[in-house]
Image (cartoon, rainbow, N blue to C red; front, side, top):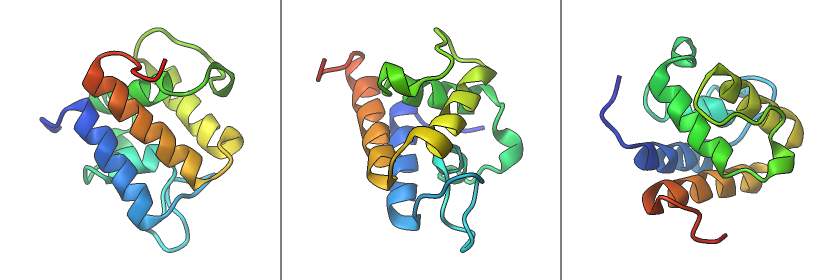
Length: 121
């Protein structure tokens, strides 16, 4: 897979969305560059959809989930597992209001990963 840190991966996924656009209800949008949150996690590292259940991708998705408000998490989990991918997908497709909210979540998750705690809490 990759040797990138979770914090760096979150930063690159946020950058991917910022530059390529945000999408809902599928991994890629019509221009084949826009992506959902999970797509940004994958495509920012050159990974395909088949890597969605890999341990590294799940760790990054878990870190993103930790940055979400409790009312934005449908199935709270305390460790990285496949339910995390479902949470991120559901949040992106049904609960996130806009691209900025998704970008803010990636930036907050990166900040938490780097600090080891939520410095804004």
